[in-house]
Image 1 (cartoon, rainbow, N blue to C red):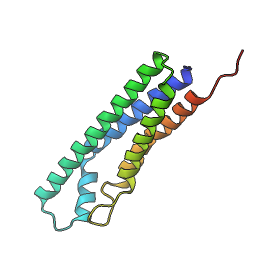
Image 2 (image 1 turned 90 degrees about the vertical axis):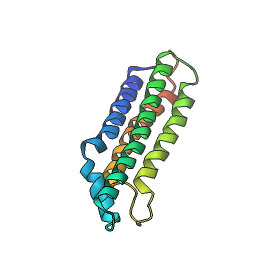
Image 3 (image 1 turned 180 degrees about the vertical axis):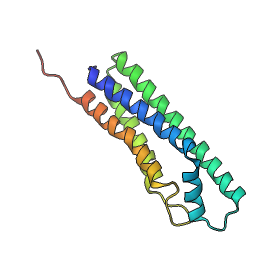
Length: 141
């Protein structure tokens, strides 16, 4: 596969790591979102909800990183099934990112702050580029 595919895959991996680390760097973002949605929550309940959210986001981020690493390995190995496999992973990743961005919880607000949803969609852009490049056939020489 081309260097452009590898670059897109590497970009997706970096964006996934950044999106996974961001909530840990700004716990107050999650805490404020939870406080706004559940004003009756005590400080301990907010802390518990933040911790649970961080575990969930860490697991999703780790699965995303594994997906990128597996795809990079399969592409480097020149496997013919790399494009369909990458396409499936893209659909799964985009589905998770859209869930984080759009699904509402019992408060009526989204379960996560919008910035986290948008950050989760950023790697999908790299995924669209990578998958598009993988499916593009090179003209015969």
